[in-house]
Amino acid sequence: MNRCAPRLMAALMLATVGLAMAPVAAQTYEVKPQVRQFPKNALRGEMVVLAPPNISIDGKPDRLSPGARIHDANNHLVLSAALVNQNLVVNYLRESTGQVHHVWILNSEEALEKRRGATATIFNFSSGYPATPANNGPAPYGQ
Image (cartoon, rainbow, N blue to C red; front, side, top):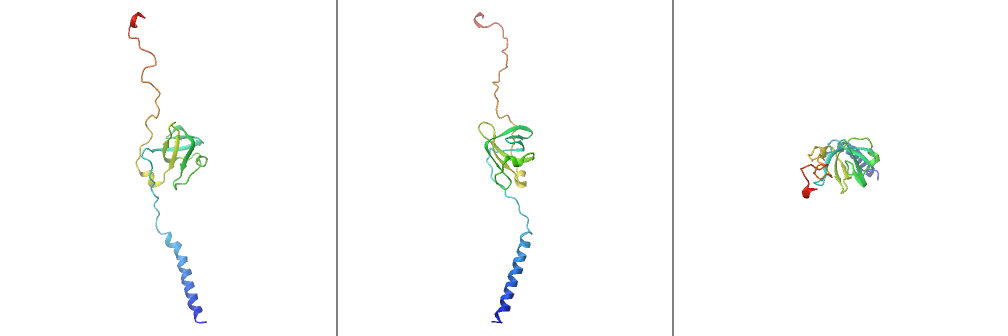
């Protein structure tokens, strides 16, 4: 029995040294953030949550829709109140009423990708005609 104890002690000592070295080896490489796949119609902008659900995107006032989803850089859901007064680079989608409905906060790799922003007018309620009618001479039928 005395002969087995030194072998067992040596094996335990080697296992302990091996486990102690494992975390050091794991910290030597750099982790590159993953790039998520976004919908093709998602827009890019800089979002600031003012007072939920009020936000601003690219300096223009906007609003989050009821039930809006905000994903952080690790793709976890985040409440808008936790993001108050932070400048965030985001991709976002709007719902049919024009409110921002789905937001993805971008990590460093995703922010490098090119994507169009919301520079165009979303809703245009004008008819294209002037507000006052033009005077083109006499009215038809002598009116």
